[in-house]
Amino acid sequence: MGGKVTLVEFEDGRLCFSNHGSFIPGSIETVICNDAPESRYRNRFLAEAMVNLNMIDTIGSGIKKMFMIQKNRFFPLPEYTLGNARVEVNITGKVLDIAYARKLAEFPDLKLEDIILLDQIQKRKPLSDDQAKYLKSKNLIEGRKPNYFISAQLAQHSDNKAEYIRHKAFDDQHYKQLIIEYLEKFTTAQRSDFDRLILDKLPEVLDEQQKHHKVKNLIQSLKNQGLITNSGRTWQLSKPSLSS
Image 1 (cartoon, rainbow, N blue to C red):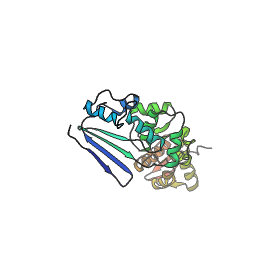
Image 2: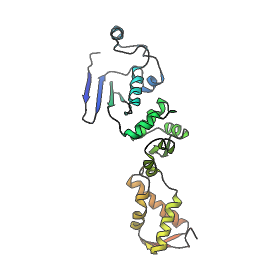
Image 3: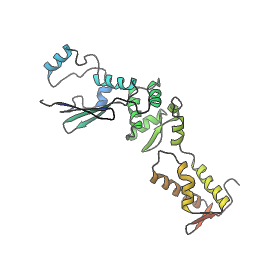
Image 4: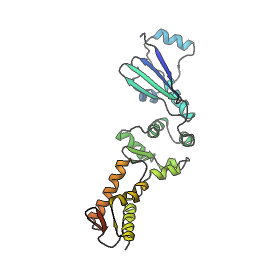
């Protein structure tokens, strides 16, 4: 092939290996699901020589073994980039969150395939609809696309209970009641008052734009219910409060 393997070490504890050529198994998923080594190689004689020198695996997948090593060390899983006649893998030699990663890796019922998907959640990488549906069916994640987060089922086995609460949204009725109580006490309010009241109480998985949109929807819902009314930019109660 004539291609060289390039190794770059980054200051953040990450190693990047890259090589020109195609990835013979086709996908990482294929390798992870199989416990056997690749049945064909670009250079059979080179492969046999490397086997004799114990340089490559002949019993199981070396790639899968690398995933297991990273998992058992509580490190982020390897990240492969395939395409454009090039294979690249990034390996991080440190934990993202030692307490959380340790508990997650030690959770007894998780398969490697599940941990791979949860690793994507930790790294804020997108999931397909089918992947998200699968994790939700096992009660491993919560939230809405694209703001998924690890569910309480895992959070209670980790040191991230507070993090879970910050991501978990309250019911809309809770936020509406805050608006009603504000108007009961102060009679009138501007949109900026509602923002100050609600924004910092919304789950952290929402970005700033989504949080502002959420407040707008809460106000509109209360108006549609006939509970509040506005005159220009000023809001006030139009009916007795929800609790009365």
